[in-house]
Length: 89
Image 1 (cartoon, rainbow, N blue to C red):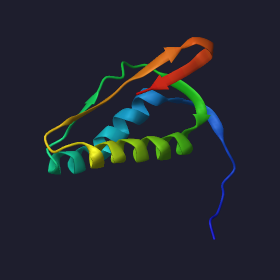
Image 2 (cartoon, rainbow, N blue to C red):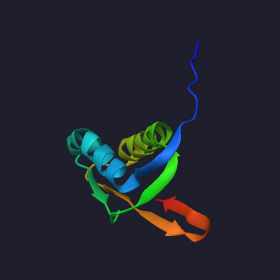
Image 3 (cartoon, helix red, strand yellow):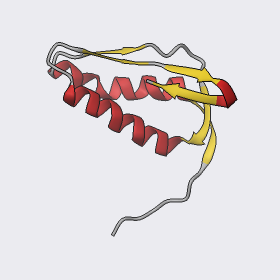
Image 4 (cartoon, helix red, strand yellow):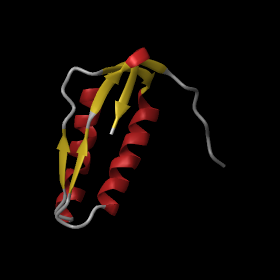
């Protein structure tokens, strides 16, 4: 049975979180010859549930590594858009 946790939004450094995730996945990407390029220019702050965002970003970057051809590259960016929205690519 899956356990659900309450959402706990707070302000946190999204740029630091992305750097941490990139570092976590570095060994896996190097094994496949993939370069991860972190193009997020700090500081980028977000107000959200940090654990949920971390889980989503880990999943997205892991999939990017999994489905990128050997010796390819994965680039991540985060830009502030209108209405206090952050666009992550």
